Amino acid sequence: MFRIFSLTLLFLRLFKIYGQLYKSLCSLYSKIRLQINDFIKNLYFLNLISLIFDTRRPKTLKKALKLKFFNISFVNQALDRFTSVKRTLFRYQKLL
Image 1: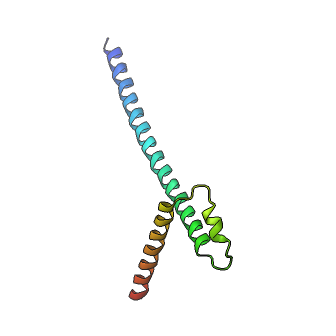
Image 2: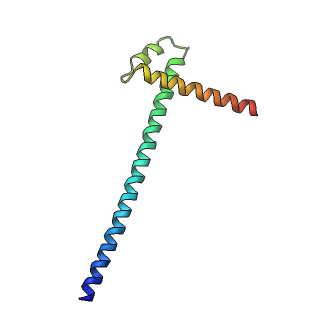
Image 3: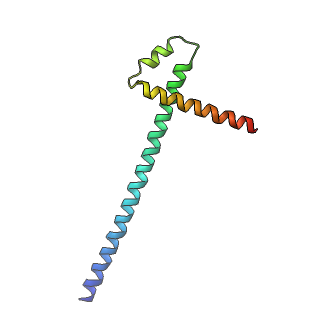
């Protein structure tokens, strides 16, 4: 009787450890997935900014306007990010 009880407790502990491990792996996966999505969005912002500010070719603005997921708020966010990066670079230049 004691062996059955101890084996039951052992299995319960193993399932508890497995559950905690599963939860931690799921949270790690979701964090990595969010970071990858942010990285892809940043690449898209940089591509959009380079298309808008490329003055060598006059058709690049038309290409930027024809992008599949183009909207005004997205461009405003990209421009805000671009200006904030410029500001921080300017601050660091002053410090140096």
